[in-house]
Image 1 (tube, one colour):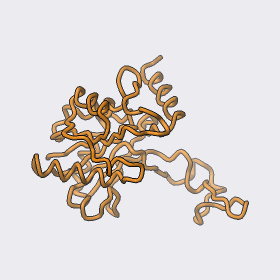
Image 2 (cartoon, one colour):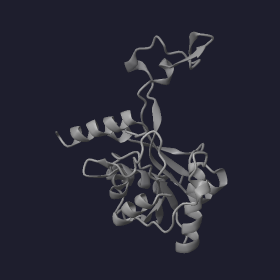
Image 3 (tube, helix red, strand yellow):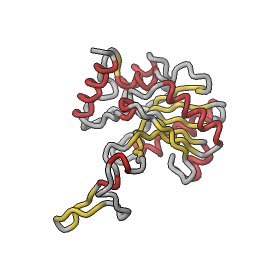
Length: 231
């Protein structure tokens, strides 16, 4: 099996400036996602798609393939991640041959484990589905969530559940952003990693759900790292 691992890393982060090259512990953030998949047999290459020279330099030094800088039209605030994925996939299959899967690793999920990545690949190979997506237990159960309508609180779900004890609620999961794996044909056909037959990669360890999207998230990642290191 040949799986292309892809990391999308723009240089223009507004909420966490320079986050992809900012050091989390002993290494830049982007290197966490590189290190976790280096040496996995099924992964034929780790490609980093970036528009930033410094990100490209750090990624290449850490062992990634960085064959070009991403075109400007695919690196703007309105460009979609899926378009950047397809650009990278099309280039790779043209230059390096076909692959069985595209594994998208968001650099903002530094604490995914190699064991989880391996489980996800095994699920993809064993179930012959179009995609495997990483999920974690939901922090807020959807049956206990609300919307505001005309200044009043209304249950978000019509299924009830507001008076159900937390231990009696059915398990609920949220996309954690740490793992997306899809076959190239399915990805091209539906232009999404999501499908009716997608299989969950359940990542139960709380640190694997860390997704750095703000300065507060960054502080939480630093605190998480201290816990993991036993500080």
